[in-house]
Each structure stands twice: as structure tokens, then as C-alpha cells.
Amino acid sequence: MEFSVKSGSPTKQRSACVVVGVFEPRRLSPAAESLDKASGGHLSALLRRGDIEGHIGQTLLLHHVPKALAERILLVGCGKEREVGDKEYQRIISTAVTHLNETGSMECTDYLTELNVKGRDLHWKVRNTVEVTRGALHRTDQLKSQKDDLRRPLRKLTLMVPKRSDLPNGEAAVHEGEAIAEGVMLAKSLSDLPGNICTPSYLAKQARTMAKKYTSLKVSVLEKAQMEKLGMGALLSVSAGSSEAPKFIITEYKGGKTKEKPIVLIGKGITFDTGGISIKPSATMDEMKYDMCGAASVLGALTACAELQLKCNVIGIVPSCENMPSGEATKPGDIVTSMSGQTIEVLNTDAEGRLILCDALTYSERFDPDAVVDVATLTGACIVALGHHASAVMGNHPPLVHELLNAGKTSGDRAWELPLWNEYDEQLKSNFADIPNIGSGRDAGSITAGCFLARFAKKYHWAHLDIAGTAWVSGAKKGATGRPVPLLTQFLIDRCKAKNAGKK
Image (cartoon, rainbow, N blue to C red):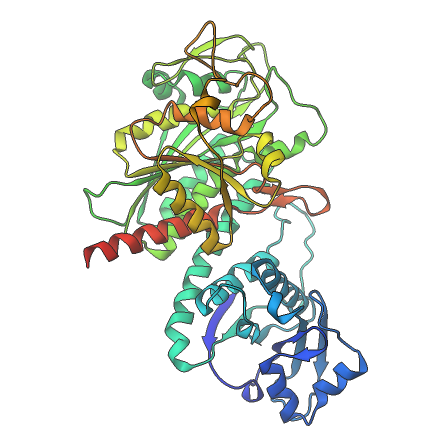
């Protein structure tokens, strides 16, 4: 898919298709008004006839519009003009792109960037258009023997900006959008793969493939023997029941100065989670291939980072294994020793994510990090608390938490803070070990999981993202979302901007 930026009147565009908006009730956008005036009222006559009302989701493809140089004009419903927010704009763009892709418009000129989106500027609209377009065109047919190939798919999209002076800003936005979309597509593709293909070894291979593509990346992988030597007893207790070897994948991005402290991103990489001996119900267990979405999002964010050539140092850590039941699997009541030396009573083997993350958090200390952010499909309780709209964020450093929240607002990949108060920490008590792997009772399950992780992150600024409700969707449209790659990438972009601003 090719994106470009241009300025100019819609009446002068020699294109296979020009895309303009229609607001409720039957009111043309400025670009559409320009075409209507040139055509002698052709568009407004169609509106008066009731061919399109302007509701979001509506489209009307026009051929041979008088005085128009474009072969076609696509009218897209935009809803009420003053009510267009992030989600409305994304739906408008997705509707337009899907229609273009299905109707043979191989290239088009898009004036939807002229829409007023509440609280958003031109840069955001252009960048978001690129991200949404790539998402709308993404197909989950990589393992299908027969693919639904379109004869004339959409290949080129020209995004219009008001003035020539807006072109540099628009081009920068396109570059960011393409980089983020590349990371999101990688995260989606990895996450949608089944557990018999996307194993810990497969994730390690994918990381090495990234390092071959981007010279700014360096990858190393710790094997089981090395993990044993380091004392990663918590991680290894999760992998004990599986015949698949665990992998501890370290991907380093060197974009900043040599001695500059890195940002560490940790992604939970459980490539399939049966729950272990505390086995899950069979219904929807197939979706537990998505328990490595944290790992996929970290690899996706590093891809975006490399595409943008950000001036910072980032280290991605992916502790990866399967959680399977067998004669060698960890049992409820077993006590394991983490890399930090803290002992953990495993009361529920289905609370395995925190066991692999805690050793990764301890391992991160060796990098003397500026900040550490772990990303995990950690708790079903997070879905109960926040649904599928926002990721949960917790941390031991309020400024870091606020950075992530602001990155979520900027990117549209939103998060919401949950507290890590001492009162919740009191739910983590064991009669036989330093800490249990679950809190007492069902209350505040996401927060007690965060409290567990906090005990292993005391030596640096740390935040935790629980993406259980945002990493994938179920039902007829089942598939990975690629979240929180946009949030993580924006967080890194903001960090670089703040660092550069501090030098001035």
C-alpha cells in the first residue's frame, strides 16, 4: 500500500476516485460542496432525492459526475459534524477504505482529512488515516489454502491537506502512521497464528528475522540451561509441563547514545495457556493462543521504533513458554524460587503470566533502565473492570504512569490507571512462602496481580499494562487488535521528543 500527501482542489484531481464526506442530515462537506458547485448541483440533487442521508457507515459511489476530472466520486457518511470524535473518524475511514477496496478503485484521493475531529489536529488525522487504512486492508488468511484475492485492490491513497505549507507535517504523519501500522500488522500476524506454529522457538526466530531486516536491532536468546543457571525458577516452573523448550528473547534497539539508559519493554509470551493443572474450561480455550499478545506488541513496537529510527535505546524482553498439564507440570501448592530469590507459593497454575514476568523484571535490573514497562494479557478481572475499551495501567512512578496514559490519549489507544495501594498488597500472604501467586479472594484480581509484580520492580521506575481486554476480539470478528503497539510507540516518540527538548 502506497501513501502520499498532496494539496489542491477536488475539482482538479485526475484520480480513479475522489473521496468526500456527507454530514447528517444530507449536508455536504467543504470538498463535496466544491465538487457540487462545479457540477452544477449534481451532488446536492442526489441528496435531496434521498440517495444518502449522511449516517456513519453509508457510502454512495458516483460515476461520470459533470465537470469532475476524477473517474468516480465516493460520498461517505460522516454523521453529525460536531460529534466526530476518534472512534467516529476511524469508522468513517474504515468504511471508505473497505468500499474502495471492494469496488476496484486501485488508487484514490482522500479529502476526509478535512473533517473536524474533536481535539485532533491535521497530523493526527493523517497518521490515523494511514493506521486505519492498513488495519482495514489486513487479512487473516495467511494459513488458508484458498485466499479471497481481489482483482483490483486498493494500492495507492493520496491524502489531501489544506495548504502546501502543510505538506511537511502531512508527510511526517504518513511516515509515523506507516511505522506504527507496520508494528501493528506484525503483532496481529503473530498473535493470530495457532499455538502449534507460533511456539517460543517461532517467536525467537521472528525476532532474529527482525534483526536481519533492521541493522539497529540485536537479538540474543537464552535457552533453558542458561535460565536454570540464572535461577529463573518462576519462569521454568510454568514451562515444566510442556515439551516445547522455553525461550528468553532479548531484542536491543540502539538509537541513542552508547551510555544512555534504555527503556525496557517486557512482553508476556505464553504461546498457549491451558491453565496447567488448574486447567481452563474448554469453551473458547482456543483463544489462549492470544496469551502471547504482550510479546507480539513488544516486537511490534520495536519494529515501529526501527522504522522511525528513534533516537533512544530500547530493550525488548520476551519470556516465552507454554503452560501445559503433564506429569512434570507444576502443581497447586508447589513452592518455587524466583530469580530475585523470593519464594512463591503457586496456588493456581493458571496465574502463570506473573511468574514468567517476575523473572524478566529481575533480569531487567542488569540494564540499569531509565524505565521498565511490562505488557501482558494478565487477568480476566481486567475485562470485568474496564471491558474491552481501555488497557489497565499501574506502576510505582506516577510520572511514568502519566506518560503512558498521555500516550494512550494521543494515539487513541487508551489506558486507565488502577491503584497499587498498600491495602491491596495485604491480600498477598502465604503461610509457607514469601508470596503467593494469587491474592486471597476474587476481589481486585488485576490490582493484586500488579502488586505481585511490583515486588520484583523496586529498583527502577516501572509500569504494568494489562491488555487482557484490548489485545483481541472474540466472536464473528475474532482476531488480534495489535494493541497496545500504538500506545507503546507513542510513548517512545514522546520520550525522544522530551529528551531532545531538554537539550535545548
